[in-house]
Amino acid sequence: MAISYMILAAQFSRFVKAPIVMNVEKDYFNWNVSYPAIILCPVNKIQDEALSSIVNETLDQTGLNVESYLRTIVSMSLDTLQLLQIPNQEILSLIDPGEYPSISLKLFKKFDESILSTVTKWPIPVEDTMTEIGMCHFINSNVASLDNPSKWYDTTSKYSKTNIELSYHDRDFFVQVVNYADEYKIYTTSPDDVIMSEASSLKFELEGFLSFGVQITSTRASNELRNVPLHLRKCRFTDEPHSNRYAVYSYNRCIIECRIKMITRLCGCVPHFYKKIENERICSLPELRCIVLYKREITTLTASNETLQRFNDYTDLPRTSRDCGCLGDCEADVYQQDPASLLPQESLNRLRISVTSFPKVRFMREIMFSTYDIILRSGGIVNLCIGTSFISIMELMLTAIRLPIYEIANIAQACRNAKTADAQKVNNKKLK
Image (tube, rainbow, N blue to C red; front, side, top):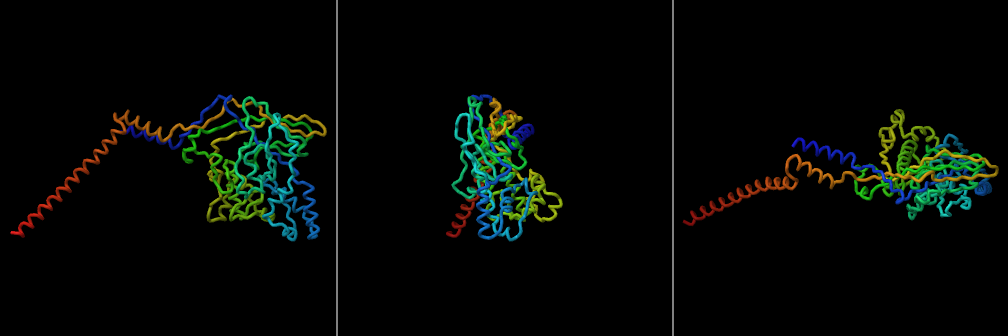
């Protein structure tokens, strides 16, 4: 019995701690991989014509020049808060902080789709998107539209898989962008993900032909994994959001959500480069100084002892990023940029991104121990150690329970019969 108990306990512990196994698949002819989402973030984000129009209109109406104010709004991001310039109160009062996101979108450079092409002439989606590093253009993204300030509160805006999928026969596919901007940063990520301020980037600041490739590592999950509780599988699917702010899930979005909650707790407002939800308000420019003060703690998600001493309740004040409780992605594509090559050419600004080599292996999350497996294995262990089966044990338990119940029922019946007999004797004596 002791041996049986030890083996059963070990099986159950494995079921609770690690029911999932990562298998390697090599049938690369039978699967597709996602071409990465390309994020282009110009250093100068402002469209001069739109800026001049608003500045001149405001100048005619109020006699105040808001150009510096507008440039500050558009340029603000988690990376540029240290460059914050605050106008005087008279100018500051002209724009409500709630309008900061829409102003950033309105003044953002428009993307000319004629500069974008693919080797196969396939259509590819482009979206204006608000990120931690300000407004950027997302190419080949499934979720970028959810971060467009004009669609933040559009209930009809939902996740839509529109990204380009590549088979082994499309391994020579590439995307090319010509004359996007004089100076800009390039990021790559999964089509179902967003970028964070600490993401690595490649800066294009010289005239010429810049090209680089990406290596793809894919992880997929079996359909049965969805039926496993979160605390056992320890990962989330894209369609399992963790907050009301985002309709989709990714590890990066969870970290951003934790960051927003920390900012709200420390400063009482949300910066305009994040989406606000009910019971939240957008920070004015002067209030952004609070974020500058706590920037290191916010970016590292590590509240210092001095900060914690200012609060009686530590809710939304993580000591480490683990306190955010963010689970990994059940399905994910990781893109590793290869070294870029630049061919200098005058009056030419061309970017080309390709897949270095089609991945010939991928990882698959599968269930190793299900509830059904535990029942079967436990039955085998009991049969091996005790020489009987679960059914026999259940029969023995039923018999052990049934016999006392049967005896108790007989005793109760005998008591009732005795009482009936005594009552009849008493009645007979009275009749005599």
